[in-house]
Image (cartoon, rainbow, N blue to C red; front, side, top):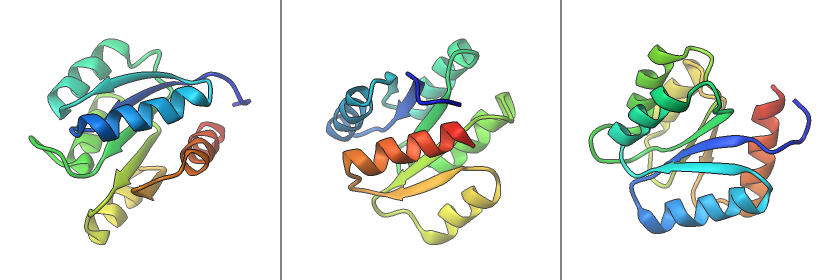
Length: 125
């Protein structure tokens, strides 16, 4: 996939983190749809999965972890391209997610360049 405007679903329960990450992604020319809770993310994903290119999930959230949310979204669309963000996630959870199809895991805080480079890499896979 060439470098183009991607549509990204960003899921993070912390409003500030969500707004900062959305801004970083938008600054790279991407369209960002956000959700604050996993349940919102599932509803949005079901409605917009045909137009979404990449999903960026926070690891620690209420309702379910980013890893659990990834597995739920993967049931809806097995081909999803997902990036997990973690400030504190257990390495075992991150490794299990990678083993089951998460494309990349990034440790928070991420820089603009790290996030945009990772999104570009995942889009090109």
